[in-house]
Image (tube, rainbow, N blue to C red; front, side, top):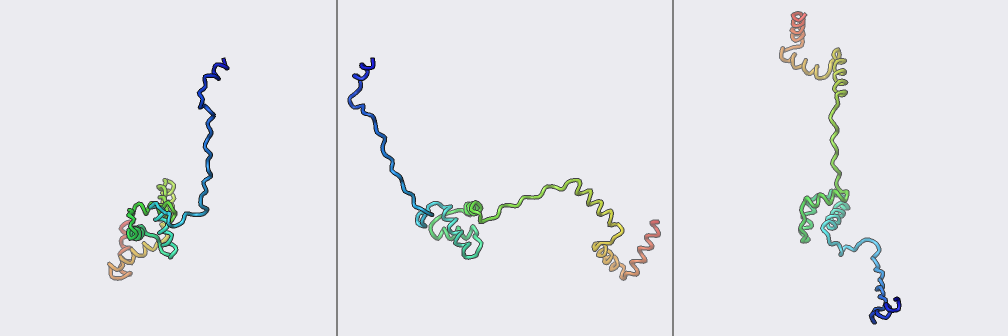
Length: 150
C-alpha cells in the first residue's frame, strides 16, 4: 500500500520551506524627540520642561502650551497623565471614625479638669466681669449665687 500512495503524490509537493526571519534592530536608548506621537508623551515632555525650570506643572499651563503647538488636550487628560507620571500627589485617605473608646477617654479627661481652670474659663470670666463693670462686682455676684445654690 505504501508504494501506491507514493505514486499518487502530486508532482509539486516538495517540502515547503519556512521563510527566514530577519532580526529587526531596535534603536538603543530613548526615542528621539521627533518621534513623540502620543498626547501623553507630549504632556510628560512639557511637564518635564516646566519642572526643570523649577515651577509646578499645572494642567492649564500645559494645555495652553500644547494648544500653541497645535495639539488639543483636555485639562482632565493632562491632570490624569501627570498623576500617572508622578508629578501630582495622590489623594490622602481620610482617617476612620472615632470609636467609643475615644469618647470615653475624652469624658474622663474633662471630668479630671473640674478643679482646673482652662483658658476658655478665663475668657468667659473676663466677659462676665466686663458685663458687671469690674471683677469685684462679678465676684460678689457669684458668691451671692453660690449662697442661693447651697
